[in-house]
Image 1 (tube, rainbow, N blue to C red):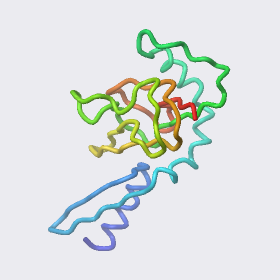
Image 2 (tube, rainbow, N blue to C red):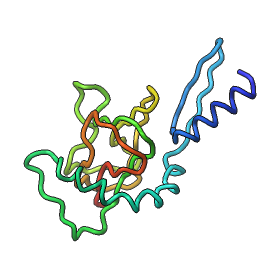
Image 3 (cartoon, one colour):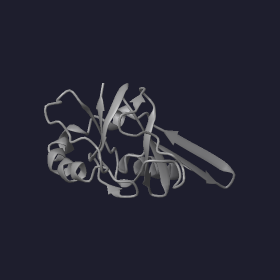
Image 4 (cartoon, helix red, strand yellow):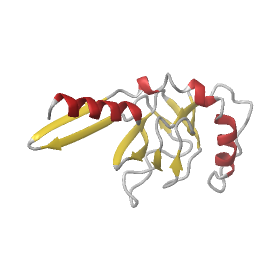
Length: 152
């Protein structure tokens, strides 16, 4: 793989906000991985649009789930770091990574977002409890869209 191809790969990596990509070509293999933290700084700009996006998702919460208490302003929102398809589990017949009410640890995988046929694990940035899952399994998500509410 020459320098021009590597630069093109890096441009795609940045442009689509990928956290990990691995390419094999002609017996050579290149793996790029970025920690989830660098994806957070661009988050404040889309968060202005977050409240309208969150409203339909909250209504789509699973049956029997407790209504969202608007007074809980100390909740941490986990947002989609990229555009893609949201999956709650590693395969259709597997248990979800997390459910509402689950205790979680920092760095624990919460879901997968498939982007450009790459499966990107989305990890929690805080320890706490999952209060609400805001996205539907198998549905497209946008950059900055709220996915989970976590009580630290």
